[in-house]
Length: 100
Length: 199
View 1 (cartoon, rainbow over the protein chains, first blue to last red):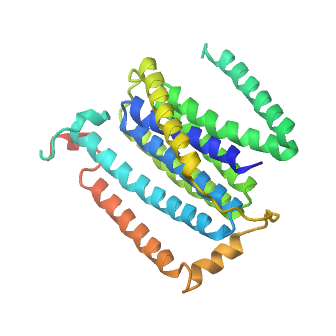
View 2: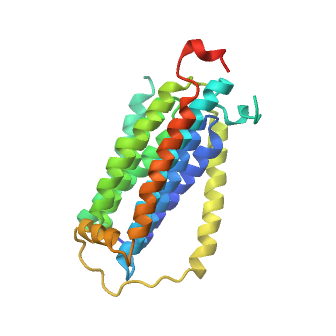
View 3: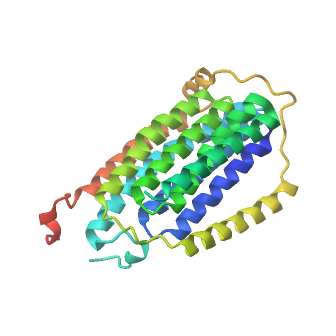
């Protein structure tokens, strides 16, 4: 399997993630699309690490991306819970004021 | 559940097609790649087209497992296991908590909007790939060595002060700060139907 096949899968995953963030009107779907985009980036990192002369750097980048994704999911979920309690809606467009 | 039978047929057809194409192209490795690629992309597509948030979240399980399999095929077993542990065990569970704690909205999916977003994203990504493919220069390894377990290499690199020790410790501090911040943000109003009026 060459590098191009993995890059194709990653590009498809990136397209799906962007479409998920654009098309669905629910904050949770935006979060899911974000996770898909980060996964696509991770596949790219690991694929380039496999086919390059220095195999460690890409994997390290992928590990730090996973760490960031975990922290981001936790904070984003806390914000979503707060938004739902404040605005009684999960639509991103419903969040339109900064103070109560 | 009327639509489950054509969906199952479609999934089986896609499975056979991807396995066959992969096996015809590159043998057993190709078949495994086809299976994992189908899991990854198919899960994403189900998540995109599914009406219910719960099913979308469970479709992401397929995507994460497929990505983990792709990592295995790329010879990075530590990352594959970390992917399963963190994404499936952590982030997916968090997403499901979020799904259960937010009001459901079954009518928000609009198929024209989904297709339009898919076409727009494909156009943008395709243009970027097309423009980058010519100018990107990539230094390949001369001969691919056989993949072997990289957990020990990664562990040594994380604890070596000349390599990744400082980012490793920073990541630990960052995770602590992020989790404390998440608890702080989610804490102020408890999940309680009576506290709706209290500011």
